[in-house]
Image (tube, rainbow, N blue to C red; front, side, top):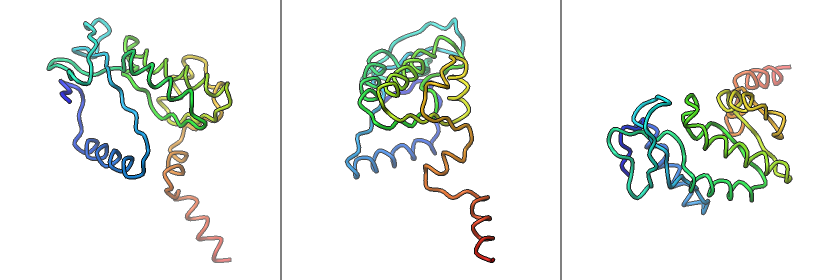
Length: 170
């Protein structure tokens, strides 16, 4: 897909390809946006344009938020989930014009939580966003530190390793 002037990292691109292969090998559905709100700079006054995956993002534009079809799709997926881990916004939330997708995701997770799903909000940026909207108390769990992410990834924490090593010496 053409990405115009959107931020790009070869390292992240390789990681995404690896993640997509892993999902396919494990028969896990991976849901990606299919439409985007774009702009030509990080400015609230920028002209906004809706772009579809099939058309790509034109040169001079950056993908700055998900658009209505993606919002609808993700809301539907979230509504059927029993456990939801939310780590990071889906748009350039520093500019209000590009926060609608993240608001939509937040509201979908809140609704799913109210309907019995377990929700975990992780990361400072996501927590700050929810704090701004006054919704932190609407989620099952909130973790601002990286420790929560490390544990979810199956990584050990240095302090826990040190304590575990000490306990074996007594």
